[in-house]
Image: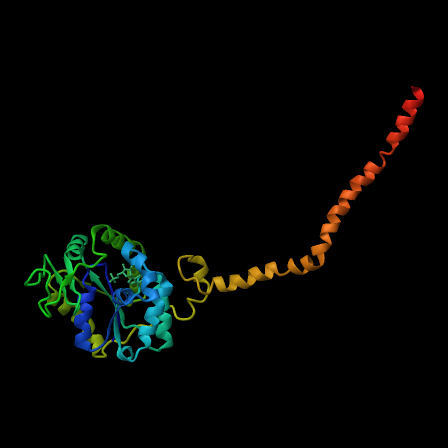
Length: 306
Ligand code: AMP
């Protein structure tokens, strides 16, 4: 099974992804987790991603696509995967389709976890995560038995750095402007499923299974993206100046040097020549001036008159 979980921050993608991964024995691939791990390990990539993550903005597509490409190549992803937090914009979804086409492993569907704004805020501000085993809690809806301590392993619970109100606001705005358009995209492609994400996690999980079981049992074939090689085929990219910029700048670059090149050859020959030409135009004036020697004659006449 190859699915994408769509939904706003706090919609419960991570929680449901973990449960689905355990049930179907496929990896839960979260770009947020991978980026946080890179950051914790102090890798250059993590350091690069930090500023955007702290601000609640999207990390650059280049970084995220690099991470996901490598992760999807791993052996455990060959039997399927649950993508959580990726794709997050149209360009990423197109890149994902390209990668999966190359691997001959099309996406089964995208599942949108539908949750109201108020619930999202409560979930995000109350969220606590175990820094050791990754278990998640919510101080309002699913509190740990002991304050700030994991029920499972006893390690300390952490409030995610980007779960403060300012950053949460940014993340929700970014979701609205950049990620939400994916809902229409997948819907128009006939690859969208919507699950009500409100309620306790087991109830939501049951709803997830009603959608996913037919896929797991092979009763439903994946719908191929209606935008195979033809769509990334340049026509759309120029129109959307947004992010897919790999194929555009490349054709542009050769043009620039080409434009610069012609001036150079003339410049080599002309490097010395035009310069003389300019001065040559100056001598034209001196010639005019050279007619002025009439002046001395005028002076002589003037002298004779005197
Ligand atoms: P998440 O854990 O999915 O909420 O992601 C946490 C942060 O990681 C986001 O606010 C982004 O800064 C970054 N991030 C995660 N996934 C992506 C992605 N697909 N594209 C860009 N940035 C991402």
